[in-house]
Image 1 (cartoon, rainbow, N blue to C red):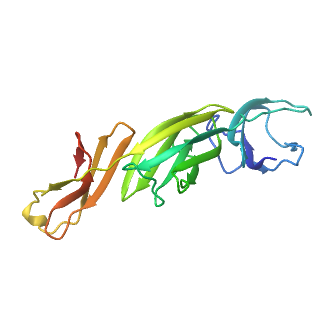
Image 2: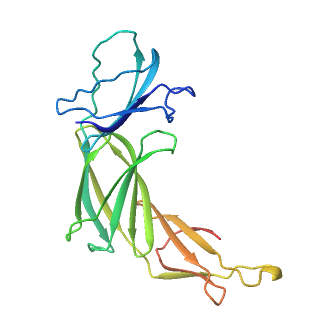
Length: 219
């Protein structure tokens, strides 16, 4: 069963969606009538609740016929997530797939680990997905690669530190009371750690629980 799908022949070129796209749904046998499309190159975008999204290109003909398209068998990501050696019930993470390849369309999977820190995310498309983990106002980012029908195992032993980083920005006199912030990023061996902070009332930018290592700060 395919839902939320559409077909178009874009005047801007293949891969570009536009308002004249024809939407359709398949029946339980996976069949759907595709009519009134122009001869020549066409784009077919499909979505399945378990198999994710697919993009197919085909040449339209001036006659009736049957075309067959197959989505990949979905992949899975499974593993364990701990923070400072312990499961964290407040942590959550998302896997994002850039379905169009140009940052214009995303398919996102959001989940939280079990109480023991284990997790399983099913129905993932094959390819590279962006993993983002959030806990304690901190985010970790990394890429995860999935293959059709296979399980990608992930061990995510994340850790926070005990160091506080304080920065006092130098502000021009005409902007004596700014309200801006900054971002701290560093590679902790598991992924890219991201911390955000706002300038406090005393004019200091503070990052708490920073792990040991080299960090970049953008104010």
